[in-house]
Amino acid sequence: MRKLTFLLRPSWLILAVIVGAFAYLCFTVLAPWQLGKNDSTEHRNQLIADSVQADPVPVTEVLGDSDAHTEWRKVTATGTFVPESTVLVRLRHLDGAPGYAVLAAFRLDDGRTLLIDRGLVASVDGTRPPAIADPPPGPQRIEARIRASEGVVPDKLPTTQDGFRQVYTVDTTQESTVLGTELTPIPTGTDKGGYLQLAADQPGAFTPTPLPQLDAGPYLSYGLQWLAFGLMAPLGLGYFVVAELRARRREKAETAPTEPTTEPTTPTTEARLADRYGRN
Image (cartoon, rainbow, N blue to C red; front, top):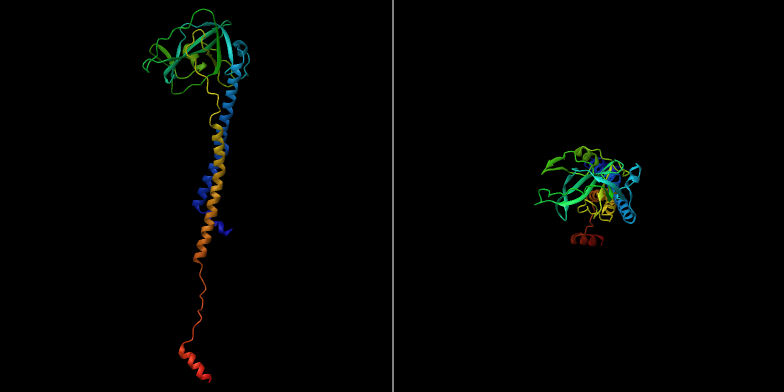
């Protein structure tokens, strides 16, 4: 045990604490974070794939199920667009160029009002919105996809510019305040109320926001890498401890005192002659 007393030095203790903390974070925070993102991405992809094959259902059936996981589901709705309810979402892109998402309110036949994402429009000169056509008046039947609200950015407040009310995210609660109209959030199975994203070729639709790519992304490999790092860190510390022990053994062997050796002496010529004639 005395050979390991060097591990009690401050430098080694600090190194051990750093390695232990890093390994702990790898196994409890970093790897689960990436693996969790992989699970949620796969779950989202499965919901999108299922929705592509499923027939749309009336949105009123979804509104009555507060626990249903409805995001990406295709639905139909009948009602009318609320006049002068246009809101633009800033910092969007269309075909790689700056653009806006166009929102509007849609009042169902039963009186409830939903938030509708009409799609994307390109900005003019990359700085200002184009002329936005109002949605068609009168009764409409629309087909859309349920999306979960994005939440709000605390330091990005709604504003009015170029004659339009503008926001930075699609959020049912915020848009309800901006429009001064009570919007019914669509249950999505999360704490964020949902809205409807119009499908292509629907009344009042612009270019639809494209669906996410159905691939799992790099999250699984990232999670496995963090697990590997969590294993390699303690192993690396063990390697340095063994290397230090070997170096100390080698240094001790090199500095150990050696016993003097006596060289056999060779008799001189005079001593040999004296010994020879003396015996005679």
